[in-house]
Length: 138
Image: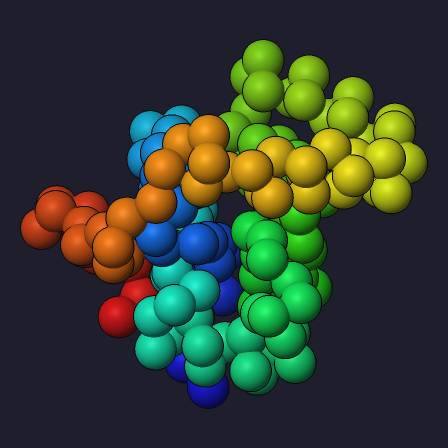
């Protein structure tokens, strides 16, 4: 298993999805407390962690938020928990938790199913710039 510092939360994402990569850049921008680290689902680290968590990525095509020693979250719940950590007005996103998870995930899945068509797809995972590299697991 890959060691993740206990003070960090890991976001696993689709590394070839333009929407997902842009979302990662937004998380980095709003992560004022330097809470999050990242790994593409397609990376060696991503594969090892999903295997450790017993997540079948052929069935779970989603963002995964992993809090070592606590839990992991998928889809809309993962996205809402990430935004909660931003603080400030981002706290308003937590209103989304009032909706049933099945409804939230239905909307999430609709967007996820169409993400390549709407936002495009890269040939390979994005390579982070040297200054961002520390935020990504190899």
